[in-house]
Length: 139
Image (cartoon, rainbow, N blue to C red; front, side, top):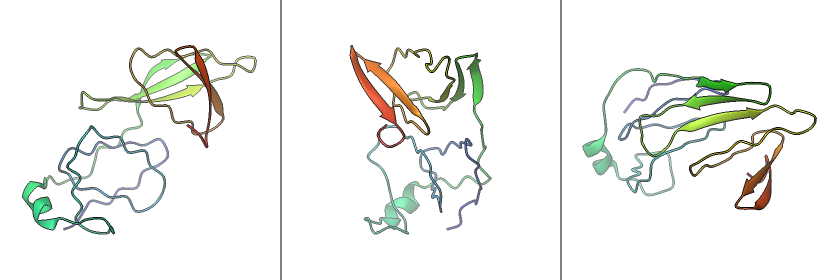
């Protein structure tokens, strides 16, 4: 089996559809996926490998993945928001860059569950009246 080789830069994203094999060789990534119990490993892991099942369900679409840098959906003096849309109803990914104003940035409000990952700096997260301090080491 051969896989496409693609180099991504910081901030790049790709969408891997179900049953499309993928791997990453080095670097840091954030991998988001819909709820599933069908991770099938074919090689390069000490975990259980099931080649027969993999060959029965694998997609053989050819071509390089479409690389996205996100779509700017909001930008002002307080923050910039990039959206990384997905074709999956379970989630959409956003990159939110807060800009300090007098040492503070304005609050962002989400009306749906969200996961915050702090890549640099720190942030205060307020949920149901509780304050949580977030930083790169404890997002």
